[in-house]
Image (cartoon, rainbow, N blue to C red; front, side, top):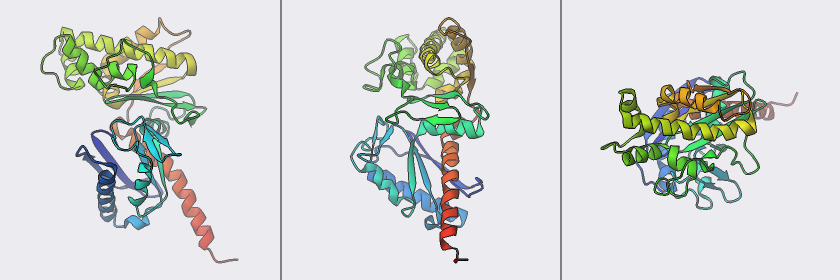
Length: 310
């Protein structure tokens, strides 16, 4: 569940997708309204796959922010207003007929997806840096997702990088205010680009040779490089994968300058920096990877419990 899209997939225990939907969010939904809409989408998916929601073994939700289990709410998720309310996350229990469910940070799931299906396969130490409407990072250490003490590992949007722009993404962190999609658009406007409404337009203009757009790209690469320098100094990853709208759409413009800048910032060699091959499916594939392992265990346990005594 993100600011603009909700993506859903229903899989069997082998991991084959039986039904899928990618839906634009209508915007402005309360948690109750969003959950009611999700319930309808889940029922539609189940019908398309020839089952009912009662047949669903487990549901995994990928969301921005951090799931605060003590208050059953989402923290640091401004793109999902209302979910910081205590008890809001518990509403998700009703989407799939009270099947067990997990709530995971979306970028953490994207990192799991990269490890299971993408560039992180066979790599024990890597980071997935998500740059789009927001900025975050999923960290894999010794082949396992690292969440930190509060589940907030990888919240690099709060790194003190860049000059900061209090008018962009107010309260979301210094790095995010300058390097997110909104930050790119804001800088383009300040430098004189007119009529630009998306980061994609800025990057397309840079490819077409626009000098102002090129300056925006250079600033974006500098912000990303300085953030990654801190990540590399602490984690020493073998690989850094760029994901999210900007990471994927502008990887061809950013990876070279970022790598070059990092050569002057890191102690040893610069790790591999690559653009995710999973695109917008990274979070969904991570949810599948997390869900399949647990769902298989649940089905096995139920089968054993229902088996007649020997």
